[in-house]
Length: 141
Image 1 (tube, one colour):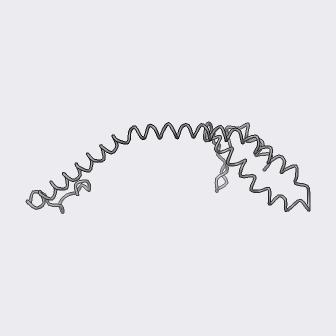
Image 2 (cartoon, helix red, strand yellow; image 1 turned 180 degrees about the vertical axis):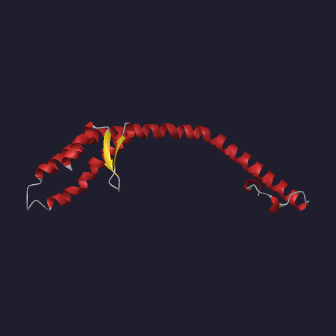
């Protein structure tokens, strides 16, 4: 496990096995790669307490040190990704705030259209011009 974790930094192409045992390769880049590496390496921290249970049987300190080293190595990358994501969220929030009035206007127009369509449908049904039982299109009902 530790060897695989150490090698994860140098790869973009990963080999996985499906539940049926069939192998397949996945090429990961960019943010997805950072997320994948961060998840795998930081997830190894959960195993340290379990590994310490074996200390009485065999030395596990070198494995723990290697896990900690990998986590220290990925930490600045994850902090940088956090900063990048924070800036992107801020920019997208500003863009959303600019677009929001147009969205609300569209929703009002759409609601008005639906109200008018429903009124027209009711008038046509009550006037005998439209028989709902003969309509085959769900959008008209």
